[in-house]
Image (cartoon, rainbow, N blue to C red; front, side):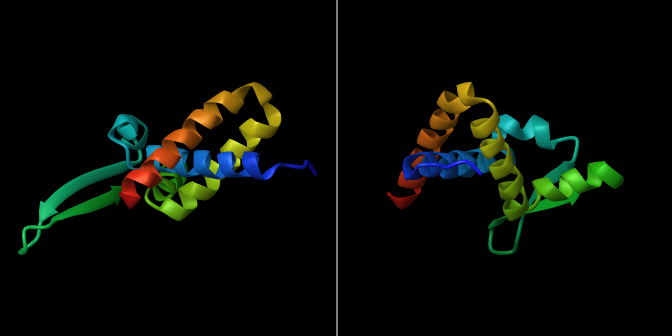
Length: 112
């Protein structure tokens, strides 16, 4: 087992948070979700916008669609990818720091 400092753990946690959000919600990554999910929007009686997600396909395609429709599920796999990058490709650390800084900025924005 490898040892990890608290600073690196915090960077990995924030990078995982940001990667999950990027893959699941950000418009820039919608082309990644498109083969697996169909997303439509409707207004309810109170004028609130309701998002409807339909998972496409069967088998592996359906499984990946299910993954992209569950924040917690995608978070686990994003964390796996982040930790794998960190441990197997040390040169990926600057990318993880960039994701972590973006994640911290998102959290700060939410709090303000």
